[in-house]
Amino acid sequence: MSSPLTDPLQRKPHTVAFLQRTFRNKQFDEATEAIRRSHKTTQGKNPKSLMLLGPSGAGKSTIVDTYRHFYPDVAREDRIERPILYVSLHARVRVNDILSALLDACGDPEPDKGTTRALIRRFNRLASSLCVKLIIIDEIQHVLPEHTHGRTQEAADTIKSITRDTQIPFVLVGLPHASRLLTDTIKGKHEEDQLLRRFNASVEIMPAALGSKAWKNLMAGYQQIIGVPCINLTDEEMLKRIHLATSGLHGFVSNLLEHALEETDGKEQVCIKHLARAFEFTTGSLSKVGNPFLLPMPQVERALALRANV
Ligand SMILES: Nc1ncnc2c1ncn2[C@@H]1O[C@H](COP(=O)(O)OP(=O)(O)OP(=O)(O)O)[C@@H](O)[C@H]1O
Ligand SMILES: [Mg+2]
Image (cartoon, rainbow, N blue to C red; front, side):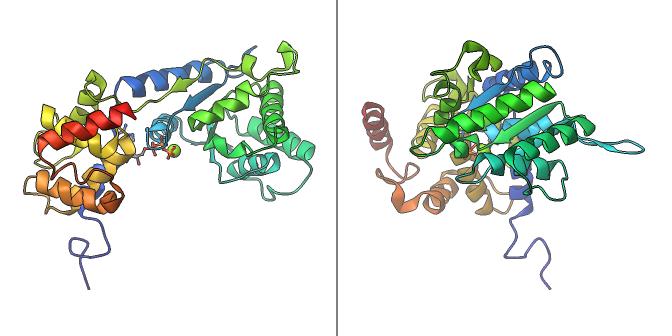
């Protein structure tokens, strides 16, 4: 039988350890603070929800995951308290699917059963008995239909109705176009009825720009959590090569380093040849410019300049 160290179907221990670590940067702290600002308004006169937006791989889910783990379920003698209710939506959901997902997260035995109004009523009751203080819905862009406006309005109205009845704010997490949930549901609505009025300003998690302090800090963060000897990820050349490979997105950097770690035994230094191999595994022939870790520096610079002009 193979041991965990040699099992070919398991990631290496130093890779697993890397994937379990997160680090905070300015955007992370600002987003966390914005979530807290909404969280604080729970059960008050005017609960204020929040949209946390950003491109895929920007690090949104990691921020809300970290936040919600500070508020775990509490087992009382006679009941469970669930201070934060978290659901993640799947493609093309309708309003009843959102309600069913929320009911399911509350432990409802038949989350799909009932009309929209019955589902809302049941959810409000359950959320109150579980002492829910904040509702996080990830992948919220899935409520936006391709063509019809009706479903967006329906989703907005449902969120508004739950907040009004329970005084619990929402944190809605998703791709940038999910902001339509707020902006496309204004027309024809009195100010009093708008969802927008019940939200604080949206927070956008943006990829770090090449040359910015944020990019250098991001790579310094990865250097810290990599956990094994590794070449300097923050020297000017490496910052350019990695940016060309990842566009400054957490998700791509993390993938790249994960594969580079799998190329090493956990003792030797992670160096550029491991990053080059990792790039082949993560992006490979999809790259339009070649492998940023094999190209001579002038070509890397040219590719970056071309990308900036697109
Ligand atoms: N703060 C962080 N520290 C360490 N790794 C991170 C951090 N943020 C993100 N990552 C890495 O990047 C990956 C992608 O991040 P995450 O899933 O949070 O992005 P996302 O914005 O939610 O993307 P999507 O829109 O596709 O769901 C994570 O699985 C993790 O490996
Ligand atoms: Mg996510």
